[in-house]
Length: 151
Image (cartoon, rainbow, N blue to C red; front, side):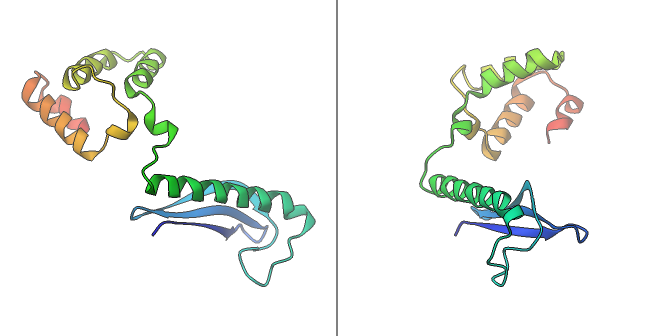
């Protein structure tokens, strides 16, 4: 079951940093919010929020609520907007920024592999990458040393 818990972490006796402890689809990760309070309001005995901490605590609770909705939407099969984005368009944009000689070559092989079909971020998973690596090994003239960086 998925959960999003607002937690605190003591920062050298100066106060507490707020973060979200997110557990979803068997994965646990922390999202640090860069918000700080003077007391540990996650403890039941600290229910009365001090005036100077109220804005930070309320913002953290709002972010927590947003993440809970995102986790529930993901579990229900809704795809976040970022996962719907066109990977090829993103890749082209990055290639123009980075201006690295290998970008066009890699893109050419990727487009052949996907048969110039649209490719979203959501489609790029471990299985996709294994199949792409298999394609590169069997169908291209790339050497083992050139492929070494992707496995």
